[in-house]
Length: 244
Image (cartoon, rainbow, N blue to C red):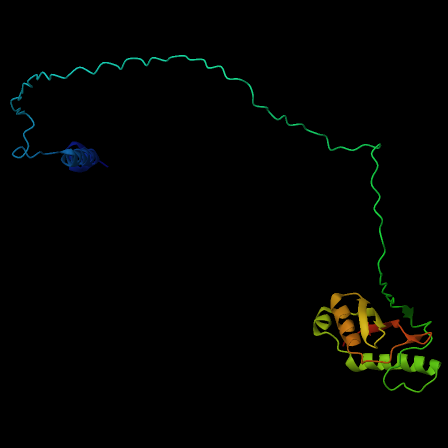
């Protein structure tokens, strides 16, 4: 089937080429317009240079009559005169004597007299263990008993004191700390609990055990050969809690 129109007379045949040429021309024109620069020639004339005449000034030469410097002074005349003086003055010579001593020099003996010397007798405080003391300390409420009964009463009263004043530290409960604390202390010659020391699994429990022992009341001091002495004693304190 033949075409109805002649392809040479088709206007849209080269439309793409024409569009590209027109687009390039428009881009070139736009670029030239953006690059175009103008200058205001009425305010600035860069082609004419005006120079003022150079002013030359002659500086006159002035001669100043300066007086010459004064002449140097004449050198002083030194006269040498020698005077002979009789040497009549005696000069004392200083002699340096050594102060070091040797074995040949004897040391003067000085008699030492002993004047009234007062000797003060210091009684040493005797420390006796509870197990071997002759008369144990008397805990309040244990008066008038035999030696063995007084010893048993002392131990029982100390245990009751520990139970009565026992308080489990809250910090130790929260941290789960428990165990045995051994406390060593002494009942001095005046009946007071002193020298409290402890050893346990933690410082918190040791501090609580020492606090309990420090609350012990005043007692009648223990005696050895009829004289008050310091009596050492040890007591264990158990810190234990039951988990629910």
